[in-house]
Image (cartoon, rainbow, N blue to C red; front, side, top):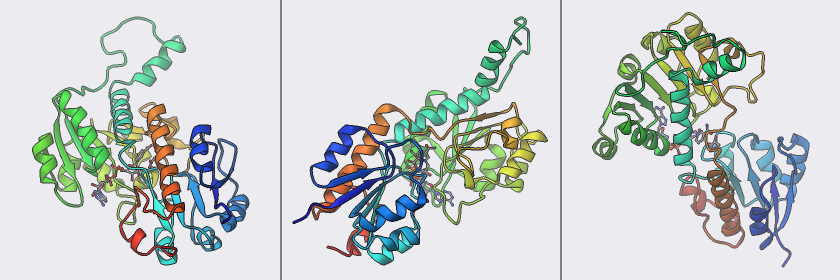
Length: 330
Ligand SMILES: NC(=O)c1ccc[n+]([C@@H]2O[C@H](COP(=O)([O-])OP(=O)(O)OC[C@H]3O[C@@H](n4cnc5c(N)ncnc54)[C@H](O)[C@@H]3O)[C@@H](O)[C@H]2O)c1
Ligand SMILES: O=C(O)[C@H](O)CO
């Protein structure tokens, strides 16, 4: 029987490609920039499996081209770049990479929180630019982290991992989720709150929900108005969870104190974006999970999911059980 064909939409380490080559012919877009749309469509038409990234738009057009497509294995835990409903309808499996990036992403969330509160990037820039003229009482003074109140919106795997870190800083932990998680409350000493209460009480508001129809623009004008003047907003989920215009307005008008942003509506964020003109914004280039070991584990897990699918077995981390029950080639 002919070997199946796998297409990888961006350059990944050779040892991961080798895992796939054990069971398939492998094609790869050998660059660190997104695979062009035409090429993606052409490859989808030939592929038994697609190894995809968050930057690939896997919509109806791509999925319908994939007459032989068995699985789309996203190298990310989030999968808002994939038209899951169409995939389900066509019986194509979709997998993601949960857990293996949880701690790395929580580390980065906390790093961003600390950097924003204590103005780490702004202060470092002052050193480079010769603006450090003397120690002085209020020079680069920021906000405390220790003992403050943290509000987590989206208490999932990463939210819980952030809460564990916050305990070491003796923070009060509030959270808002679709439904309360009593086991997390006991384990982490976290308190469930309505969204409005959390916005009003927290010193740090951390967005860690997936991007869905319900979370798009979850943070808008009204939400920023409810926050404290000293509040710090951190977004490590997805850019569209925030109305960026409303955030800009809130920061500019000093309705809130600062924001740390790993994700944006448009990525890469244009260098002339209004948010980048503000000194109280710490922007990062979507590096939440970017530790070497987490990225390797994500790539390996995505590859393992493909190998399992191509050998007739159930992939380890399908985004939902019905992906398997509705799989068209089972
Ligand atoms: N910046 C990065 O590099 C990076 C890295 C990893 C994950 N992420 C993002 O973080 C998200 C969370 O990852 P995770 O592994 O913790 O996922 P998860 O599914 O374990 O957690 C998400 C939580 O959000 C909650 N939620 C969903 N809709 C909600 C709503 N409307 N209101 C309140 N809570 C809601 C869910 O109930 C769940 O508890 C991913 O979907 C991804 O978008 C970003
Ligand atoms: O969803 C994810 O996993 C991130 O955005 C990339 O690590």
